[in-house]
Each structure stands twice: as structure tokens, then as C-alpha cells.
Amino acid sequence: MTAAALSTTFTLDANGADPITIKRLGFGAMRITGPGIWGDPANLDDAREVLRRCVELGVDFIDTADSYGPEVSERLIREALHPYTDVLIATKGGLTRQGPDQWAAVGRPEYLRQCVHMSLRRLDVERIDLWQLHRIDPAVPADEQFGVVADMVAEGLIRHVGLSEVSVSDVVAAQEYLNVVSVQNLYNVANRQSEQLLEHCEKDGIGFIPWFPLGNRELVADDGALAPIASRLGCTPAQVALAWLLQHAEVMLPIPGTGSIAHLDDNCGGATVSLDLEAIAVLNDLA
Ligand SMILES: NC(=O)c1ccc[n+]([C@@H]2O[C@H](COP(=O)([O-])OP(=O)(O)OC[C@H]3O[C@@H](n4cnc5c(N)ncnc54)[C@H](OP(=O)(O)O)[C@@H]3O)[C@@H](O)[C@H]2O)c1
Image (tube, rainbow, N blue to C red; front, side, top):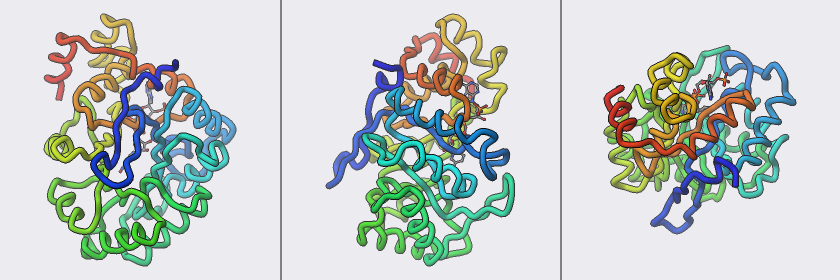
């Protein structure tokens, strides 16, 4: 059994009509694009190889978005993995791109509908298993954004809905229209600004997908804050960061992202690391 296969599972929509069980350690496919998440990666074959290796390692949950590239990440996923046997592809829409590292939310209903249709086409599926509203656009009434997503669920274009970068009150407002099965917010051992949302997710059984799960490069560097624990436990700093997330909450679904096979292998090993009480105490105090 591979490292990722050892990670425990979580069921999205556990109490609903259409549950999906995934392994808790997934993969984020944002880093398989060019610099600034813009354009093609330096080596397309390597990017496709990373995706195939993910699945070989037992990862069955891959996160992407129409805006990664834009279009590049979804296209590479189709080229490498279609028809997605035993792997859940979660995508997002609602962010537009103007250049490297530039992102702007557009939540007009007709645009969100276009996002979903284009993702369906690029991923070559008839229904998106998990579609996430990348941002709630503050310039458009939230009800209109939730409403059109609910329509697309009813029409069978979307199976399950997630939200991204939201507050507890956003989730509660969306739940008037939608069955929200996951949220995706910035969160890692050193940045717990979304702890309140995490607690809400635990209470309601909503999957919590922490983006930037490894934090900045210093955090997981060989001489960074996690290095002493890693050295004592015989693992790497990145594995410590991921193991802490997995042990911190049962709804936690980390999606570490990388364009490198070596880092992918390292990250999947995070599912096998068991932190002792001493390590957890130190890590809990880090934020
Ligand atoms: N919802 C949102 O608004 C949002 C925003 C950002 C990201 N996301 C999603 O979340 C996923 C993860 O976020 P992220 O990629 O920003 O952060 P991350 O997974 O924490 O990765 C951060 C950086 O760490 C490096 N890295 C990966 N594995 C490593 C390892 N084992 N050792 C040392 N360095 C390592 C990566 O670069 P290398 O390529 O060099 O390995 C990457 O640049 C993305 O892929 C995307 O799917 C969502």
C-alpha cells in the first residue's frame, strides 16, 4: 500500500443523498502551470507525470480551477487522467485572470454558468463532481451567485458544491440555497485565521480544504520552524505540516500542491507520519 492510500477517508455529503468518500490527503493542481499560475509549465510532460504519479500513489482527490493557467491545469488533468477512474476532480470558477498573479472575482450568474460549461468541456465530463465558487463576488448580490449554482445542481451540471475563502456567515447564507459539502480557505499550522470556520465545518460535517497547507517556503525549509520535530521523528518538515493538519481535525482535507515528483512523494508520505503529544504541543503553539 502506498503512503497516500494509508491516509484516512472523509465522506462529502455524509448525511445527504449522494455521499462521496475520498482519502483525506489530496493534491492541489495549481502548481502545474507557469510562473504566476499563468500559461503552460516549463515542461508539460513532467506536469502530466506528476498527475499520473498522484493517482499511482493512491491520491483520489485532485483540486483545480478554471483560472489555473487559466485553463492549463484542467486541460492537463484531462490529458493525464481522463476518464478519472476512482479519482474525484474538484474544480472552481468565478475568478478571472488578467496576467501572472492577477485574479479578479466575477460572480455574474451568466459568467458562473459559462465557467461551469467550459470546465465540463475541458475536463470532458457530463457533470462536475465538486464545483467550488472560487470567490463570492462582492459586486454581485450573493443570492444571485448561490441561486445560479443551485440551478446548475438541479440541471445535473454539478454534483456537489463547495465554497472558497468564506466566513461562517457566508456558509450559512449559502446553505439557504445550496447543500455546501466543502469549503476551501487559507490555513496551515502557522496561519489559523480560519479556525472559526473549521470549527463550524466540524460541527456540520463539512469538508475543510486548507489551501497553502505547507505555508511559506521558510516553514517547510530544512532549517525552518518544523525542522527540529521532523528530525526527531525521522520525517521531513513538509510531512510534519501535513500530519499536523490531518491530526488537527477529521474534516481536514489538505491538498498540497507541487510541480515536482520529489515533493509529491514527500507530501504523500505525510499521511504516514504520526505526531506524538510533545510534537503536537509545540505545533499548536506555533500560530
Ligand atoms: N481556493 C483558493 O483561493 C486557493 C488559493 C491557492 C491555492 N489553492 C489550492 O490549494 C493548493 C495548495 O496550495 P498552494 O500550492 O498555494 O500551497 P502549498 O501546497 O502549501 O505549496 C506551497 C509551496 O510549497 C512547495 N512545496 C510543495 N511540496 C513541498 C515539499 N514537500 N517540500 C518543500 N516545498 C514544497 C511548492 O512548490 P514546488 O512546486 O516547488 O514544490 C509550493 O510552491 C493549490 O494547488 C490549489 O489547488 C486554492
